[in-house]
Amino acid sequence: MTPDNALREEICLLAKSMFDRGLTAGSTGNISARTAEGGLLVTPTGTSFGRLDPARLAHFDANGVQIGGDKPTKEMPLHAAFYDTRRCGAVVHLHCCHAVALSMLPEVDAEDFLPPLTPYPIMLLGRVKLLPYFRPGDPGMGEAVRGLTGKRSAVMLANHGPVVAGRDIQAACNAIEELEASARLALLTRGLSPRGLSPEQVADLVTTFDVEWEA
Image 1 (cartoon, rainbow, N blue to C red):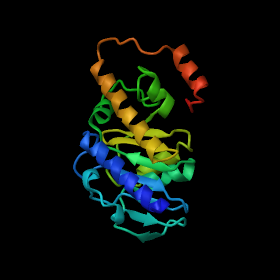
Image 2: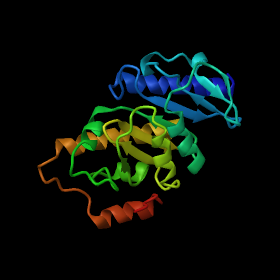
Image 3: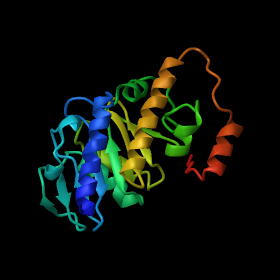
């Protein structure tokens, strides 16, 4: 199996796993990943994560020219913004329920979307920036990500869904799943005055695991 074929299979396997566990539904969500030659494989527009065909993933060469597969997701400007401003190997965007629900609450900190309740969101995501609502496919999403100048690996699109960039497809999927789990935990403990991590404990994680922690 060639590296590109292995990556195609991996994208579809991980996408189906997320679909089967209810992390995305219908034809929502999209994934892109760097190929060995520096191009991209991208999930097609209007397709379900539960029924992706590896052979039909949109394929772009290193110059950004599509050389195969179906029409890509309409969120390509959003993906491109991460690749152009960060060193990353994959980008994942979901419409997962708990993260979206949390994004609608008025008390959420736009600069630090996830409250520091457990270590792993801090370790895998750093600070998550809450961006305003954009309609699906709006190029403004990409412009908003570019405006962060590569300082965030994860953003939350209000009333829409999270987007996470990772060093590879496994890392990006692990991180976005942690984001959704953390949002669920935040909702479960909302109004209960949970005992979260102290600033000192957060600082220890940031230092120990060399976390990007832009204000």
